[in-house]
Image 1 (cartoon, rainbow, N blue to C red):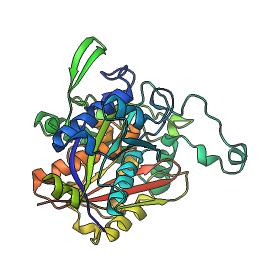
Image 2 (image 1 turned 30 degrees about the vertical axis):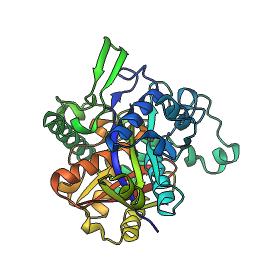
Image 3 (image 1 turned 90 degrees about the horizontal axis):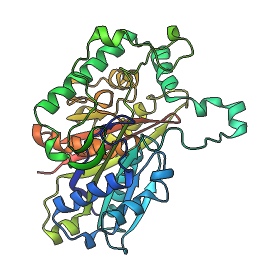
Length: 387
């Protein structure tokens, strides 16, 4: 079995959905730009790419019609390069990378582009026309629970206070602001020429989400956004992930292709695991997925140098950190989705690009990208930085 290497990657800056710089920027155009940049950074001819796999959480309307194929063609790739769109909700981008990497390991591909794209501005949750299954709405209605309510259930069931949740959110913003000010994301971001930004044409190259003025007083004043009664809720607009727009891709290559093209790999894709629990909760499944992914990679959870835990809701990330006894200094060191945003199907690709860059910066070896997933699922992928 061959190894699967990440040899290049790029992402857009993340825009605030509906009111940010990318509110009118098409998701296929976003994906096309990062595909082009990823190929350019790899330093190979586009014709060498054999497949494109993109995650997308709501693959309809502007990001329908197999958005991966549309984006590949928009990027100017030859007609002969195929593409597929993957949907595992918030893990779609990571799932896409795992599919490409698994095919490389199996000898079915030598070179692929993988990642994800999502416009929560142009395609709103839960889609254009939701049509729940009648039997499930009667016998298992939690299948269709609002994700905010699922996050609140974690806080209530497992005992996370509003203060703890707000403190975590404040830390996310503070770390994200520090990372932006230090220029830690500059090299991974593809600047976008946005002709129709909120105030006219702009070059968009900086994540919009982090709140420089975040404070415990300000966070504490926000009302719960999801519970039927504010007194019953925990998660607000300040301690939940932001609705966002963005795209990210990486190039996955086999060991043979790396040698053939003289490419220096950045990281090795080591493993991927998914798990599931009750759809009434977000997060518990990650407590299974993360150790399983580490076991498949031949390491222990304690061996991991950095974690990127998608902050869908603060209580969910706290639940993972607490129950796996993680060192908080290794988790989301540059902030997370509460501050930086969560463009759904893009997020797995975005966090992959971020964690590889941060491992390199810190001289770390192993990184884990993990997220809760709608429907009570969880996912985790392990990367090993190359020398």
